Image (cartoon, rainbow, N blue to C red):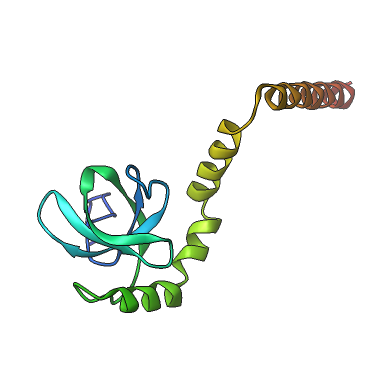
Amino acid sequence: MPDPSTFKKFVEVGRVVLLNQGPSAGHIAVIVEIIDHNRAMIDGPSTGVPRQPYPYRHLTLTHFVVPALPRGAGTGVVQKKFEKSGIAEKWAVSSWAKRREALQKRRALNDFQRFEIMVLKKQRRDAVRKSLKSASA
């Protein structure tokens, strides 16, 4: 019988994490060693994140795991396994990464660009409303 627990993402060696704070915020990295109940050693050689201890409260666990990563693996081993498993590509096509990218684009817009988007949304809404009215008639 399967475990009734719905919790699927555990802090484990090889777990891919999203960094929420610090100079590498927004990048992904891999847990290579569990230091204690507050911190883990992370490394992201392919994503530009240096090897460093990082508190769990500044990480978000993703559902990606680098398979068969040994504890305390060096940066070269982490990079080889990370690239072999294709985690960066999987992350790039995930809805989570796409949503983060869209939010960053939206935050970078100036006032006029936001106005243009509002006008385009109004035009689209009117076109949908007209087509629905003609289809229902």
